[in-house]
Length: 133
Ligand SMILES: [Zn+2]
Image (cartoon, rainbow, N blue to C red; front, side):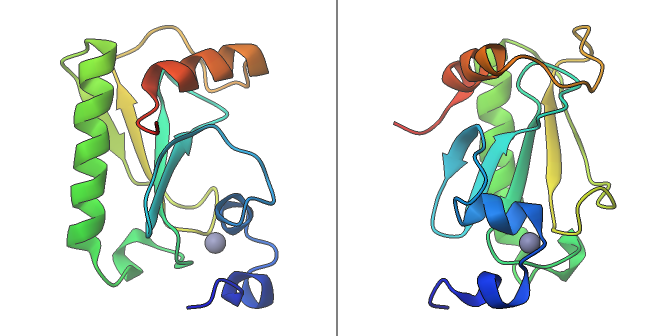
């Protein structure tokens, strides 16, 4: 893959645009194949989406779902450690954006309602949870 595939095929996919850097995001983890960033409509502090950079619609379509889950586990453990929460929830819905993504949410509930919060607050949360140096 030379990096231009998504421009040709997936011009309307918001997550492909995030991967390409065309839309800003609050990234907390990135490697060659995966990206994790804060959900902009968080249900808790640290609510993160983990995606493969390759565009597939469903998690179950991704070629190496085992490797994908290893990355999700690494991030979930990190979110639990940083938040101090014992519970780290996760769910796979998938209809909101047609690009595979896994929600990871530290804690049971801390009062957030899935609504957008101020950019300064998002940046503070990103700084707290980032795994990027
Ligand atoms: Zn996509």
